[in-house]
Image (cartoon, rainbow, N blue to C red; front, side, top):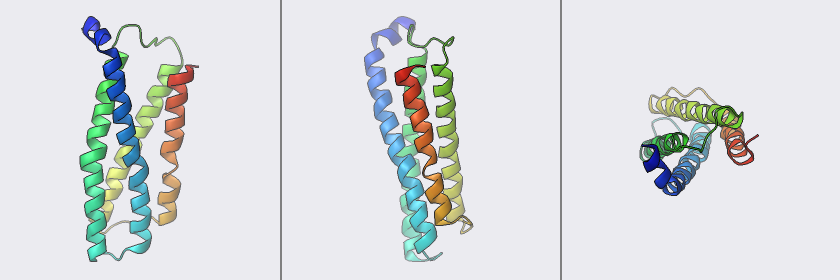
Length: 149
């Protein structure tokens, strides 16, 4: 298995980066949709239904598959011989960032369900603040992987 992973390393890395970009696009956009949904949309209106549709499709058709692909290609990279040395600090900090990003993804999924049920109690300001969370995780992940401190 190690020989196969080594032979497709560059392809795996390329597809990992593509998956991460797609996932991050959704991670940054969905909280922004929640800001507008919370601040400007009357519950039960046609616009409410439109926002619910956009949020559902973004999460289910883009973000969920991109997250799964990011994890799959990332784990393939981890198991490629000679790529990760677990005796160093950087793989652990990167892993913590990826787990944090995954938690945030699921938090967004629960917030979407709140809007769907007409039970959102969070303000647009809360979603604006939460929109900064993935930036922190992204910085941790990228610095860990590139600088390898």
